[in-house]
Length: 59
Image (cartoon, rainbow, N blue to C red; front, side, top):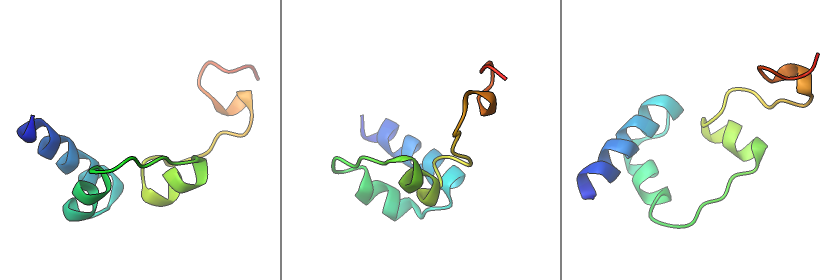
């Protein structure tokens, strides 16, 4: 399990721009993100505000 957790943390660090240490600390506790927090952390690139902005959404 520890190997999987570290591997996931390394992947998240690579894609979010956060340090591995920060990812490991943050993943050791419950951590909930709203859309703005997820964007600031680096988990997402864009916040969709209408169906047309989502792939497969209505135009």
